[in-house]
Length: 252
Image 1: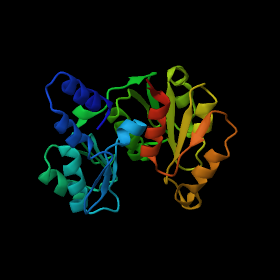
Image 2 (image 1 turned 30 degrees about the vertical axis):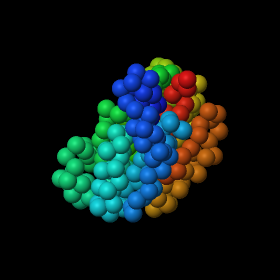
Image 3 (image 1 turned 90 degrees about the vertical axis):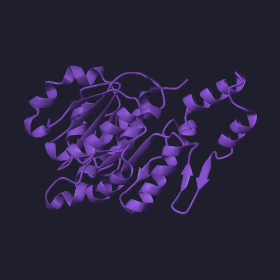
Image 4 (image 1 turned 45 degrees about the horizontal axis):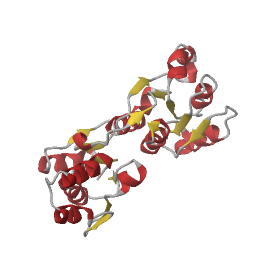
């Protein structure tokens, strides 16, 4: 349940369109619905502004489906991350109201129940290379599901630095910026030196041997001398999206 749904419930109660008992019945399941596969935190969107999300990587298709079915019944926005193609095919066959993005590896549904929010502006997503696209798309689709407008500047790494320098105006107009880069992870430092917007660096596991699965990029970003740069974990496009959403959302 989000703020819009709670306000609608209380409005209908005041208008006599729903009984007090029906309201109590809906609210009594907040904050947690417990069942075999999970304990769903239906109160999370009211509490934090970000709904309950399913991390699908280590779950079976049956477990993910069971959770989604309960979220769908409660009119909750549905987002499952890190779902591979085989799981997605099985789940979408059973639940045709879902959409699967194979690049971002996201299952999405109930977009119409996404919370209505006010935002400061546009969130710009920047990638160093096309190999970083899956993480960028995970962040972009998450943000758009949460109601945040985005703009993309992809394949603009430091090997051809004129590409990102040519986007300085766009970077300076952003409310927040997510920069996704592997290899040595230098791009977030460059971007943070071009704008006063908060910059969120996402190191990716793209790179050769001494890249160590993204650790070189992570350490490079953490050791940046550019102010205004924060860093999330390796390949964590979803976490970067949540941080950018918190920055961009105007709290009432």
